[in-house]
Length: 198
Length: 238
Image 1 (cartoon, each protein chain N blue to C red):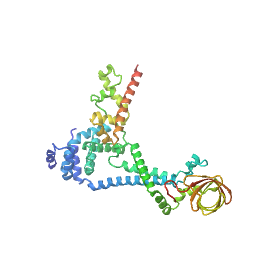
Image 2: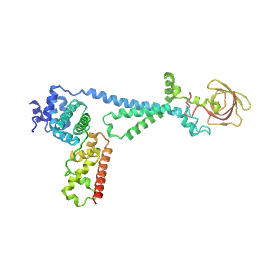
Image 3: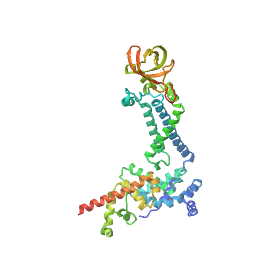
Image 4: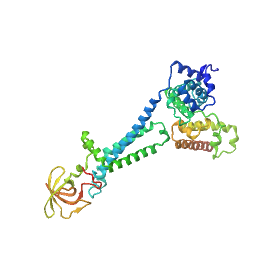
């Protein structure tokens, strides 16, 4: 397959370089798709909680939209932020179109999120208890979706503030505020639960 | 079940089958330039609106200023609401267009609106100082029907002899403390000026345009307490 040949040619190239090449030779776009299909599928799945087939549809739409808008690619941003933004918008549109509620999945409390959330909270011996991780997952389920989304991008997708700002199209200060509030809300729920347990 | 084709392969097929092509760059450029242009136009129009607000508040201002009879109520009643609303409307439309530009999301609403208002204010001051404010107002008066009804001028406020306000042109002196006077409506008056106060650069010389505060003594006699120059500090006149 011709496209596969070009994939071999672009392994050492940056996303932005491949975008430029894709505009001259559309075969290069296949490289970008290959590079991002898994990442985007995981992201869309976490962002929406929809079925795998639907995730595939959303990612496909994302790629088609990205290809059509390649000339509008904001190359001042990282390509990854740009395509994540499209994926985010497509995912939200999918939920709206199918009248589905957003169910953000934060499935990894092993990542930095656990330490970060419990930092400063009065977490004693529970921290070492495996049940605590399940409990933490439960608390994360209860915090506001807009907070969960930034937490997911920061901890699950490993995005920095600037990337999150570019993906969600919010000012960087707002991103920082959302992250801070997420922690405050987590602590609030945690402390409240602890009070009732006593 | 293992997938037979990856998303990339399926997407590739769709792209080929439907002959999907990237939208030409110029279309995006036109859109981006258009939005930026519309934003700038709205900010500039906001500046023009601010200049007319200044025009009406200042030199050619329509308010009764801080007179004992005017006071805060009079100021509130006489604010140039049409142009103030226009300024707010243009700021909102400018914000709308700016929000549609590429990197607008990086800026907070307060900063965007604040900067737009500041830009309009600075431009408005420049137009005001340059004397374009009056021309804008005149252009509207000449070309927009009913404009003067929604944005009345100072002279309309000052043409209220029953309320103690009068504006017009000084005439010849008739005797001790008596002058002829023609208001901006063309009516002739006799002014009685005993114990009056002259404000600013006002004078009672023949041909001077002035505004008067006092009270109507009879049908064509106006007792003057205070005389102010019609022309403001900026030297603009209607």
